Image 1 (cartoon, rainbow, N blue to C red):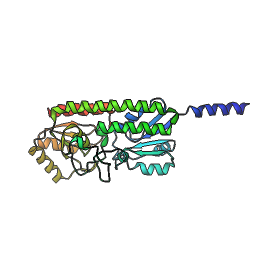
Image 2 (cartoon, one colour):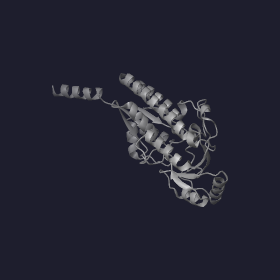
Image 3 (cartoon, rainbow, N blue to C red):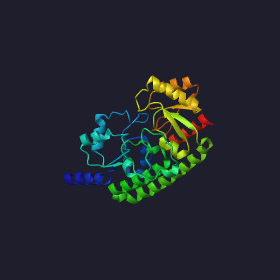
Image 4 (spheres, rainbow, N blue to C red):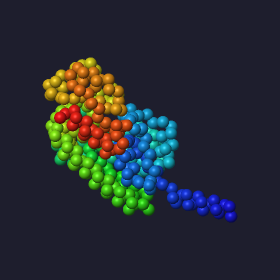
Length: 294
């Protein structure tokens, strides 16, 4: 009798167990958590305020992945460290890379945004592509739809729930996209100098131009010659401000801003204490740009 009771308890617990979902970075975590609601447990790997480019997984991350049924990552080299963690964890989870499944016109990592926003839904990403696609809210709307479909596939008993919430999230993101385009129209066409090449998709979507990035690669200090060249560029293009990032040291950005005689501001590409979620992060960046460029 006791064994039968324990079996029924275990069966009931299994029936009500939530689907375990792992997401690498805060922007996707913010959106996918909204879609998952109370039907799935969503865990973020990279802490808020940390950079995925410089993140080092811990042993606890292997354990987290071993329990997952579904994993969402950006791909395109941003969170490539996840591949090794997945292998070591032995997880059988479905892994979805947004950079591989979403349709968009890629920007090469060594380029800056120059195309119009209307051109950006034409192609798939490829090797050498700037990975920061999540800074275009219209691409995040596509990601929300795909995330809802994957959640529905992995957890079919809650499929309608996920699909309904994904549709609502998609519409909310498209409204955010339209809002950003409208308000940033006040500074359309202006040049900005960012800390690293994270804002190319943002710039293309919302009418700005990235004149230069201070660090060619995250965590790699620019040479003295490169700093001199950037200062000259700021002066020649009449750039109004330089932008650091909360995830990385601002020393080089501060040096360049002071040398060029312009103000230093902070833009947030991946989520930090400056904002509570993806929507807050994007609006914070919009407000900072308006303050710096108007």
